[in-house]
Image 1 (cartoon, rainbow, N blue to C red):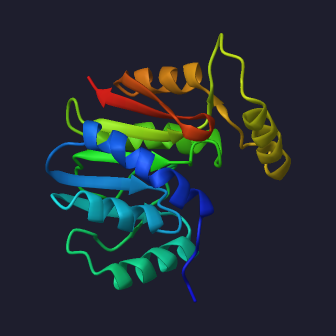
Image 2 (cartoon, helix red, strand yellow):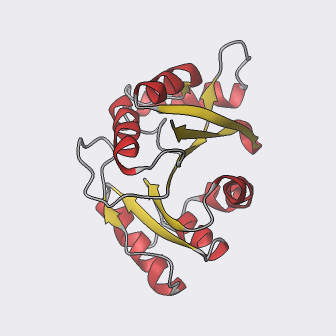
Length: 198
């Protein structure tokens, strides 16, 4: 059994999809960076049949899981997953209409976030969105206890991981030619951030 299961997927996919319906283009290809198990990819491909959905991941076990879910789903708009490490300087992918990245920025070194914005700047046209989902710390806002505990847990597993400051992510976005166009408050103390190329 190659399929992986991420329990949070079932809890957050509807809320994420509701925002994606407002932020994604009507047609084109969406690159999902760090697709993980593949459960989101199947759900979103079914939810948005006019879009081509391109999953990707750096982990061979994740790619195998995505392939299993894709085989079962048999959706015409769900593409075969690509091996992609967001931190790599060159992404071997074609131009995209949008990029979605769920729960990667805090569970990876900062270099992955840098690579994500650099790669997006190379693959997205003007005004196309790079959409992030996950927990962030915001200046002037008291962090939720659950996020503080999660941050400590992440850093105990890998010192290069951790919940990022929203200001740092947005500064990184500006350097790559993006502006923050929308901030959506999500359940369980998460945010969806929409950055668009300017």
